[in-house]
Image 1: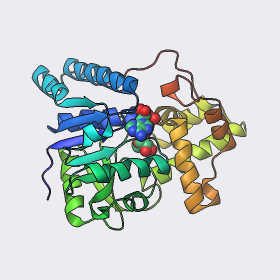
Image 2: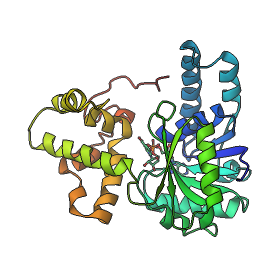
Image 3: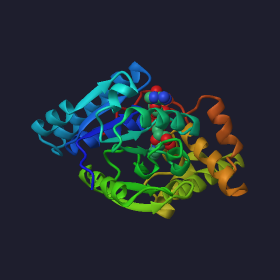
Image 4: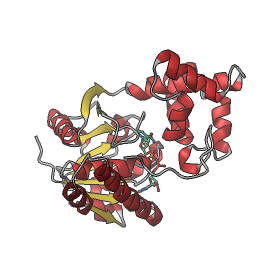
Amino acid sequence: MAEVKTVAVIGAGTMGRGIAYVAALGGYRTVLEDLLPNALRKAESEIRSQLDKAVELGKVSVGVADATFSRIEYAASVEEAAREADLVIEAVPEEMESKIEIFTLLDKICRPGTILASNTSSLSITEIASVTYRAEKCLGMHFFNPVHKMKLLEIVRALETDDDTLATAVEVGRRMGKEVVAIKESPGFITSRINAMIGNEAFYMLQEGIASAGDIDKALKLGLNHPMGPFELVDLVGLDTRLHILDYLHKTFGEKYRPAPLLVQYVKAGRLGRKSRRGVYEYPEQDAIEA
Ligand SMILES: NC(=O)c1ccc[n+]([C@@H]2O[C@H](COP(=O)([O-])OP(=O)(O)OC[C@H]3O[C@@H](n4cnc5c(N)ncnc54)[C@H](O)[C@@H]3O)[C@@H](O)[C@H]2O)c1
């Protein structure tokens, strides 16, 4: 198994900052990078306030919180972030072109032994890995939102991923406090494939006027014991992210995943969920990440 000391995270949005948090809490030196300096500043202040809340709730000591915070560095470029990393986790938007661009660059910058992981929710790791000269060292590490609360890490083995890379990622995931399931690559893996289907069906129902968003959420929570309704969840995930996933599943699996026209309309209107303060529901005050 490869030794991992430094983890780089590319993209400091909803997922990247959460992954940096659990990596640092797991004891790794962590370097977080984003194209937008503002995203990095926001990530830094959210990580700090999340650690403060964890202290208040008695989940970590002041010493652990401070040590975690000091293990995270912020880099102005992918080169700066990744050159010393043993593992790089990419968390840029769910578009194949962006993933390929980042992996091409990472393959040039990183040491030959560095493992390259993508947090993609649905895309083919085999396709992303094929632009590198180290396909055997590429895999999917699919974290869930909010990263510090959600227990699962889905590890995705692509066509060429070797045993050592898989074992290393499983061990890193455990040190980050996650329960791991390792799966063979397939579009949408286990979770996104099922979740996208439920969420899309909910948009079709809303579009057909069968019930209000609130009642559809209530029905799934109280009748099917889901912890969140499909609209509460899509507002958290991001409607744009969900649409990217559905587009990909539609392309790979066919008609049954065709995105509901209402979802497409919401995304066109900029109603992206909590991150834009309006999704299916309205969020006048931006929520800080809850501890
Ligand atoms: N949001 C979720 O609930 C969720 C859950 C699991 C997995 N994912 C996956 O995680 C990935 C990221 O999703 P997100 O919700 O964090 O997106 P996001 O839009 O919140 O954040 C993406 C970040 O990447 C940055 N970025 C864009 N291009 C970049 C580049 N070339 N280099 C560096 N940074 C760049 C953006 O500035 C932004 O800050 C996607 O693949 C998504 O499918 C999302």
